[in-house]
Image (cartoon, rainbow, N blue to C red; front, side):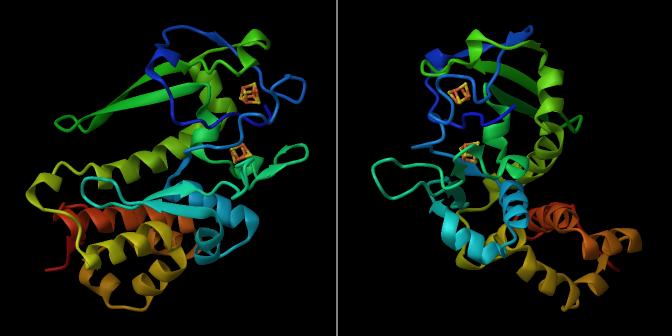
Length: 256
Ligand code: SF4
Ligand code: SF4
């Protein structure tokens, strides 16, 4: 596959529940190739940003300065990162190149999943999630008229979605904590914690390894070693730490 659309202002009449295979192809031969990578309301999850900044070779701070606009409309004040489109009338995605997506290997989740949409339901009592999928048929997209048939599982595999779903679901568990009702909007200090743990692994690394945090919590040596070498693992720990400090969840255990 080449570039896929990431249009997120989806109209409800463009979505239909998906209960079987679907036909789709997106490659340079489609007449609409690259047309969808503009004027997008494209949410970037913390893991999207991590992968993109690693792929481009930037620090989180520089990546965010260049490519992110923040939306604070979340009821609790959680910041939502969105990809900054070009300032001119074309409003192109900054990663759209001559031959398609320049960051294809690390493209965001929203670009990967199209033409599907996923809704998840968390069953707190059984600690499991169920997914429902929808087909999003945007009128300008000619990808439905060609290509092979895909099952949902085949599409997920082809687009590398399981890894993104795992990380994005962990982020959703922070933003949609079942304990969020017992506290009000995030304070300035809470926000600093969110920006550090979810969006700035370089700063969070310093906090984890150069403070007394690791002496005060119960944590496996193996996990500490993994965090030293993997920003992905550090981000996972950051999500658990945020649930602990923001909502008092038992995702982190203090030593006696
Ligand atoms: S990141 Fe790539 S696939 Fe996504 S909108 Fe930009 S150019 Fe298109
Ligand atoms: S086929 Fe659809 S996803 Fe692919 S470039 Fe055309 S509009 Fe975008």
